[in-house]
Length: 392
Image (cartoon, rainbow, N blue to C red):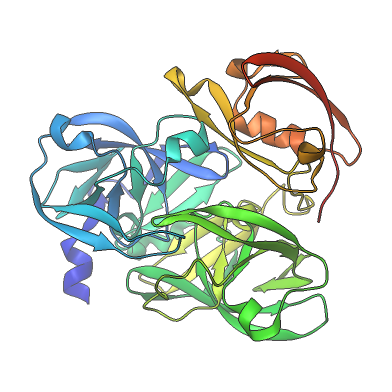
């Protein structure tokens, strides 16, 4: 195991004890600059839920002069066939002052994820285990900075936070913790600590074991390597994280139609960025621990979209916002919004001057708030009034 860990890892100048790397935080994604084979920087999402660097833009193969060894199938969640990817030989990878050693990657044959459309800016891939396995990585969302240390220098980090034991299995980090459901029942759960998941909490297979909580909504939970992930959203009563208690987090419950293959490592679900962003997070893979220190947003309520519409960025410069789904019975559905409609402006502000995150924040801002949308529908523009309605 140690040989594998050393085979693919990152390090920085031996004369330094600490390295600070700025990042962008957009739509619950930590985005770092990555240079590959002397070109870039490219935008990669830091994702502790991936065990192999993943390049999601197939056109980078030619521009980076990457040699690949073979075509493989990648199983995973989603309502579709297995994704296909090319496995590369060793490539030269740098992340803002760090150097990768022995790094290889998988390059998607087709960009099934459309991360650029989801985030609203060009995204070229995901990087996880290789960046964490040889370093201590502290993620400070207050100043959007990664503070990087070597494991031998972890004691230099003041106020690391509450230590939670963590196990690394097949290059992914897991913790064991208690989840309490609305009916008061609780259980110890094995959860993946997943920086790449935008949601708060996801509990796999619980529908099959216990059924759904009384109050829930149907939802598209995201996109996996094999297509859309469908299911439901409800609220757990409480999640314990060390000494911290997370009350009424929004919780995703994937339905049984998504699982073409169960994870090779049995687990009960994952903790995503909607919870993790409420902490300063320090990952210490070699010490089998994650440290959490309460941040300013710790007590912010968990709110879900109040429109029932899902959307993505598209077109030149990702400046067009297209509706991909409308939940039946939602306020968006009731005013006639449809898949394929384009949102042109929100409260008279053109969407090309807004980020998707700004739109998200408006759409989950306040129950009974009215929002004026300009929509391009059936070949013509029209103004509609949308009333936000809390659904869960």
